[in-house]
Structures are given as C-alpha cells and as structure tokens.
Length: 467
Ligand code: LAG
Ligand code: CA
Picture 1 (cartoon, rainbow, N blue to C red):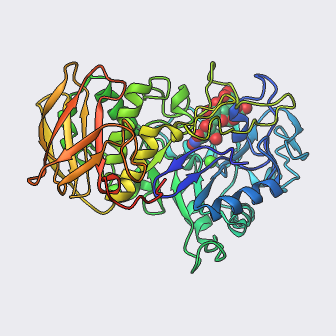
Picture 2 (picture 1 turned 30 degrees about the vertical axis):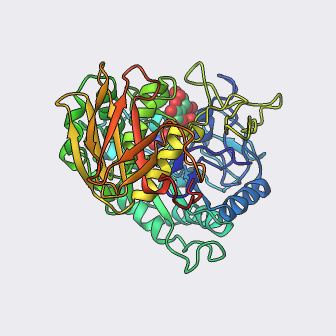
Picture 3 (picture 1 turned 30 degrees about the horizontal axis):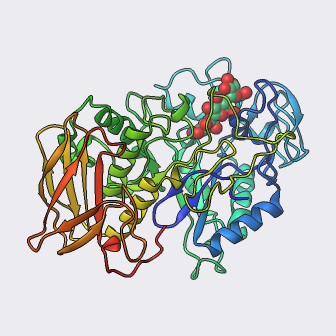
C-alpha cells in the first residue's frame, strides 16, 4: 500500500493528501482532485483508513516515516455538488460539507474577501491572497475556533495512527497566526513509534520566488518552508546556463533562506508539470541532468532534502496509474535485483545514483563542505569533512586529473557507477593516496558524469544498510 510519493533523506518519508476528495470526471480523474477535500475521512483512490493505518504501521516498523499532505486552506471548487471518494455529499455552491461537518458559516465570505468575485486576482494584496478563493476553492475561515478545532482533530487523528508530520498545503493562503494556533493544538507523536512523543515535523509549501506581497519568511517562525528557488537555480546550472563554479557559495548567499528553515528539492508534483511554482525545473524526463542535480543536492549541506518519486505522464492533468475501477495501481517491485519499478511509476528514489547519494548524505551528516575545487567553469568537486567526496563534470570536455578528496587512504567504491556489496565494488573503484589525493577520469559523454565516494562504501568497511 505504499502508494504515496516524496522521499526525504535519513529515513524514507512519504506524503500525499489522504482525505476524502471530490471525484473530478472532466478531465478524467486528474491527480489534482486530491486537492479538493470533501471531508476528513481517510478514503481516497489510494485506499481506506484501515489500509492507510496498515501502511503507516508497516512503514514505521521499517523506519519509513509517513508525512501527510494536509489540505486545510480550502475544500472543493466553489461550483457544483456531488459525492466524494468516501461517500460524503458536498455542495460547493451552498458551502455544505456534512462529512466534516462544515457549513457556510465556516467559510470566508464578503466580510473577509473584497475581490468582487471572491477569487484571488492580486498577489500584491495580502488580505486577498489569504481571505479569498485560490483557483475558486471554497476558502475556510481559519480564524474561527470551530474550524481550527476540526482541522486539529483531523491532524491529531493522523498522529494517533502514527504519522511523523505534515506537509501543509497552500500556507501562503492562510494567516501565520491561524496556522500557529492549529499547530499549537497538535499532540506529540505516537509514543508507540516515537519514544518521548516529539512534536510532529511540519513543513509548509510556501511558493515564494519573489515579487509578491507575501514571502516565505513570514512562515519560518512556525516551521520550515519549501525553497522553490533552489530547483530553479540548480536547473540553470545543470542546463549550462550558469557556470557550476558559482555553486561554491551555494546556500544563503544565493538569496535563499537559512539552511535550518528550508526543505529543498529539485522538483515537486506541481512544478514538474508546470503547475504551482511554474516549471523551469529538471525532472525525471531529463535523467542525465536530473541525476546530476539530485546528486549535488544530496552531497551539499544546505537544507533538509526531499527526493521526488513520480509516475510518468503525458498531459499535466493525468492522474496516477490506475486500475479499471480507477483505484491507484500498486507500485510493483519489477525485478528485486535492480529495484526497478513498473506499472507506470517512475520511482526516481530507486535509481542507484539517487539512493546511493541518500546513503552518502546520511554518512556525511554533520560535516562541512571542504576542499572545494573547480576548473573555473563547469567542473566542480568538494568533500564533506573527511567522510565523503564528489566530483561533477558539467563541462562538454572530460575531467581527467588528481584532486584532493580529504579522505583517509584506501580504495573506495564510486557509488554513482555502482555500489559496495560488502566485499567489492560493482562499479568503478577510486584509490585515495596517503595524502588524500586521488585520480579522477570523468567523461562528459558518460550517462552519469560524476563520481562520489564515502567512508561507508570504502572497501573493507562493514556494510551498513542505510537506504
Ligand atoms: C498546492 N500547494 O500549495 C498544491 O501543491 C497544488 O497542487 C494545488 O493545486 C493547490 N495548492 C491547491 O491545493 C492543484 C492544481 C490545480 C487544481 C487544484 C484543486 O494545481 O490546478 O485546480 O489542485 O484541485 C483545479 C483546476 C482549477 C479549478 C479548481 C477548482 O485546475 O481551474 O478552479 O480545480 O475546481
Ligand atoms: Ca485562505
């Protein structure tokens, strides 16, 4: 039942809206119907509450944490009525959602929203962005105690099931004070899986690429925010529109928020298909550049990283792979040996270059970037303390030289071209000399023009299962 996408480093973590949603038939069951809740019942195309609970428990036992995508700003589109995926009636004209229940009193109206047609038009006006309707979605009155308590009840129910936290949808359209109030109502995590019941991990999907009245910095007091500039800027570098040598100062110096305030990613479910936050980012459809950008992200200390995992699609509305009854197809295991996946799923997180770099990140955690080297243009390399080292060739010519890795002497497995299987390297070996230098030969025409080594994949070391 692990049909949820999004992975973050350290432990595998996944998120997706899980509440009953509107059934959109035109276009035919688009992925985005999930962003139109009908109630807080846990019944969707991915399964019911019993199946969700089973997934969370099973994943927790395997150290895979589940983060729920909480859609709490709005309910369905304002027009129409129908029956949701859990059988609840909804009426977007009458503002009636008896499955919660919410009624017209629980939504922002003409007193709060002054845009005329109730929709958001002017992103230069904070009141309008927060009190009016985002793409005509009925806007909840989060200042009201009843609404806040229903939302907190829903989130606390998920916490009791065993989720580890939340991706909060559309925070830009909610007042930070209202969010703080709701977060304050949340219980500590379920002690059965999280000893000591720590606070849930919350990150907020604030799309801030500048030029608007509301900025992500208004939300960092509550919890982390998504950094949308990150993927756009890295796409420019790996598309050779901005020299890789500038990545030497990657991070806050690039007008991005503090490292401790952000979740970073190369692409997400919206911008990989031209929805929220625009396109312009690298995706699985450009695998060579995508793997390089993802490897850089995972090797670099900035931010809390998230790895995307997708299904393949033709049109930007197309929903997930589904069976005849429209239920979401399982992500099968393809062949166990190569971890490939099928049934229309892409599973970027099962690409060796990506999962091995997740292990790299875990191994080098807590170290700084050191031994930066660049060729003055598109070839770069750096170490993470004395635990890991990466060299990336975005140049159109080969990289062939000795570099200082900062690592102890020994033979390391390049975790891009292969893995360390406990005794030998299945890909290329890198020999680090006593003075920390090693020779690198990275052809620009290679499928993966980069090499990454770390002390967890050093020949002779104990192999730990880290991914
Ligand atoms: C998000 N983050 O802040 C989600 O990441 C994003 O995927 C959500 O929009 C958005 N906020 C609202 O939750 C998605 C689609 C929209 C879609 C919306 C509601 O990107 O295209 O709108 O979910 O399903 C669709 C139509 C609109 C229509 C609306 C209401 O595209 O034309 O007005 O439904 O009927
Ligand atoms: Ca709102």
